[in-house]
Image 1 (spheres, rainbow, N blue to C red):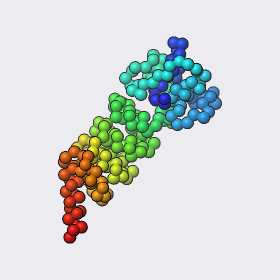
Image 2: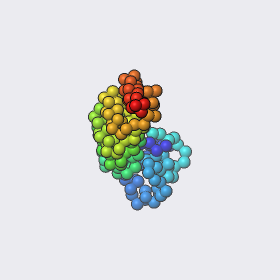
Image 3: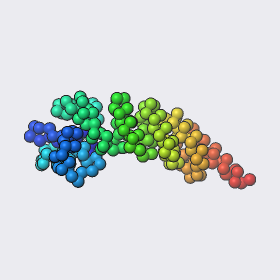
Image 4: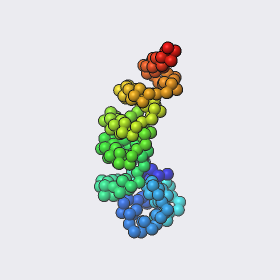
Length: 210
């Protein structure tokens, strides 16, 4: 597993990695072959400490404080102990999860990092569907910059709150959706949006007939 934050428990000891270990000369040598979010997972911890056995632990909701005391202590100065790991190895999906579920302090931190990493449209869509409004606004703004696909907008219409369905519908019409896009909305979206899609589809059919 490569969750932030991960640790290994063995012989009543807690093993985990901070910037100090990962970015040291020793760490760079020991962790050769690791890439991306490997550095925040159990594999890197075991590799660094030459660990066999023990129990892999992780808490992706690390902000809830349910961590070993050794890690809690390091979390008090997060940027010093985990800042480089966060900036270099947190993946878009992990940051998206934090934006949706964490307290605002962590949402802000994760949102800034996510935007630096050029999030996928899927990441932005999940935020629009599930995060609080402040973060939905940031995600929507970025999604428009990235030229959303019709499918992105259709799924927002299907799953997001009404304010965001309205925005997605307006944008979808600008992009001239295919009849198949409208048919999907008719089949799966809430009633208000089904009616809009049916009206738009009927308008096209009538225009073709005449």
